[in-house]
Image 1 (cartoon, rainbow, N blue to C red):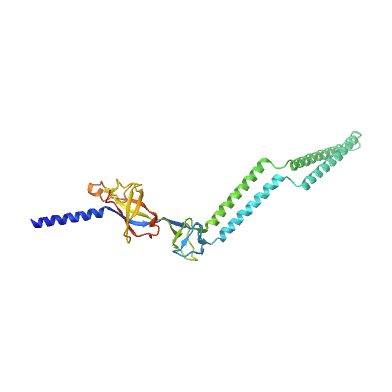
Image 2 (tube, helix red, strand yellow):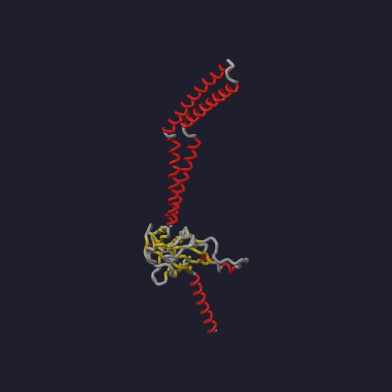
Length: 316
């Protein structure tokens, strides 16, 4: 009888231990990790900050080679200058010298027409007196008509120069200038992206590539660990998921620290992290884990990332 009592007592102790163990959401302390990628396949020219150093927002982390991009930017600037000059030419109209030359051609054509008209009249009188042949009259008539056509052409050219450019041509030139300006903005942005700067304060956690290496496009060239209060990323057992909701106050234990920290649940996953593909039994459902994140109080700001942490679920 005594042996049976001892066995039952031992089982009860084991059950209590297991209950205490499962009443904890296990995980680690984490901080936001900001990754920076290369936007172009270029060579790393500068690494001004060492790994593990504190960085501030706007500080240069990596500089990629920018010679080819600077050339493309210069080409875009030249295209804008060309489009700007063409639009200015259309809006300003023709040069005064060209207009004066066109006016002089009109006067010359008028004089030639007057002479051709008089020559034709003389030839017509001589034909009537039968002093010359009809062919000479026809030649004079053709010369007069040709002079008249030259005068009309000169007048049209003069009108074209004085009327200015067509509105459609001006609108097209404006559109080309706007496109050139947009291209400059795009090339300038690409040039700026070759100098990678920190977007948040933190610690430079990793520089995967060395100075002088050519990095592929979209490769991660720097990782910054944001210098903010860490949060606990833990896995909550399914049996405690119902009451473990955002906004709930909990206690967080950190390895190496005696006193627990106050925490607030900020997010819990809606789907379990481990889900069997077959129908879940009651025993299997108890093994499901839900990923959650718990914000810590301000006093935890100096805690390092990656150390184990446990959220106390015993009071739920």
